[in-house]
Amino acid sequence: MNRFVRRLVVAMLFGVAVYGAIVLYTGLAKTRDSLTNFEWSAFAAALTLASVNYLVRFLKWQYYLKRLGVTKVATLDSLLVFLSGFVLTVTPGKVGEVFKSAVLEKTHGVPVSRTAPIVVAERLTDAIGVIVLIVLGSSAFAGGLGWAIAGVSAVSVGVIAIVWEAPVNALLARLDARGGAAARIVPKFREAYASLRVVAGPAALLIPTFLSVVAWSAEGVALYMILEGFHANIALGRSLFFYSTATLAGALVPLPGGLGIVEGMIREQLVHLSHVGEGTATAAMLLIRFATLWWAVAVGFMALFALRLRYPDKLGDASRLEPARTDP
Image (cartoon, rainbow, N blue to C red; front, side, top):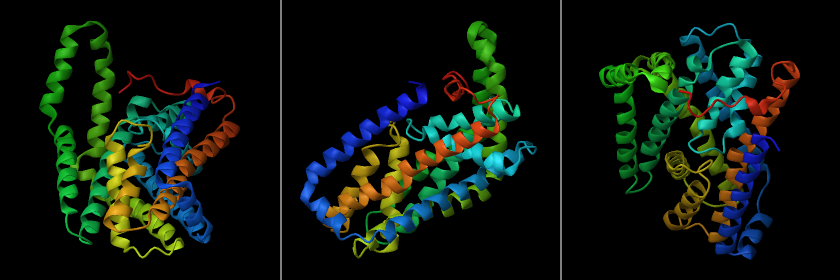
């Protein structure tokens, strides 16, 4: 069994365990009854909105590639490479999305060290975009602003680390002076850091952050649509807040795809802050996760399959594409 299938199976088993535990905690009958009365057209709408999220984030990927001077990749190939990164969505902190940089290297010869920093820039602008949605959603009720302040503080630290070159350069100089294995990776880190400053510096934040707000609001609206399918009377602002806070928490906790954290937060916020019935809250949580997390994994595998058909000689064994953990 290759590495990707093994990881996916482990993540799926973990997901089944998490979902099973939540359903048992809620009560199987309550969850089943809620799903019986659900309007499934709302789930189709949620899948569509999740797909909109992926397409908008692809525009960010294209923007970053252009800033780095990577302009000779056909749009279709670039889209498939971007979507292939979703194969490892269920890895801690989504670090598996560096996989798309490895695919781009194999198919178009672009070094991983040059494009891997895009993943950091994507996560940073996604975090800022999600925080914007949290701030907007927090106006729907008291107590939400505290989440926004905490998120802004965390993102500010990341931006300072990118903008302030002196500490990073000093660290790399010390590693270079020590020699040995550490010194050998310094050139790659320098190249990666230079790329990171290009794609994540203050001048490059505005457009990608706007795209992140649009992308993640689509999935927040997807939660709202699913709740509408259950005839739950929840304001759109609250749906955006609930989904955004759960997404941010899931990104910060080192669990595959935020499994357990995102699900628990969505359910508990629906039950305790908006007084949604436990069965409906659990069913809505399951559906939004299938429409976002697991749909993304499925899309990733379809994209990778299409790429392997287009480049059979270069992607014959996809399990060897994942960059080593020591890569920047």
